[in-house]
Image (cartoon, rainbow, N blue to C red; front, side, top):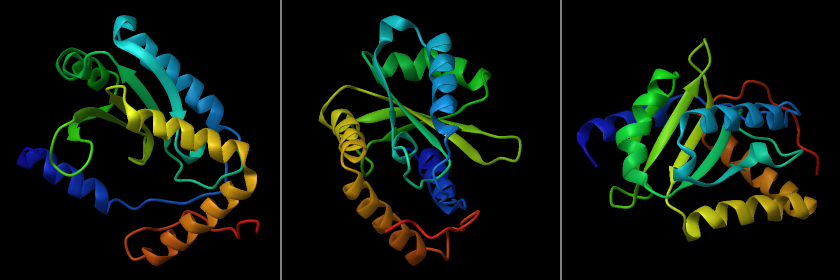
Length: 176
C-alpha cells in the first residue's frame, strides 16, 4: 500500500462514527445508490450488486452508512476507468487492500453529505469467498432475529468500549 493511501485510511479511522437505531429509509437509500452505480459503471463489469452490512438488516442498529458491494469482473478497469467517473459524481476513491497491506486490492468509494459525514460506502470487489460471506452473513441475520439481536448487543458493547474515538449521534437502549 502506498503512503498516501495509508494516510487516508488512518484519517478515515479517526473520523467520528455514530451508531444509530435502524432507519426504515435505508432500503430506499440503498435503491437510489444502486441506481447511481448502475448509471456510472459499465454493465459488462458488474457481476452482482448487494446491500451488505447492518443497514441491510431490518431492525438492526448501525452506522448510518449504506454499504453497497459490487462484484466486478475487472477490478483494475474499475480503478483505471470507472474511478474517475465516480469521483466526478462526488465519490471519494481509494484503491485499498482487503486486509493488511497486501493484495487483493479493491476500489472503495465513499459518499458524503453536505456536512461531510459519510453516507455510503461502495466496495467494488472481485467475486470470491469474502464477498459471498458478507451476503450470507446478512441473510443469516435477517433469517434469525435472535442472532441479529445478539449481534446488535455485541456491536453496542464494542461501540461503548471505543467511545473515546467514536461518538453516537443518539443512543437508545437496544431491545433484549
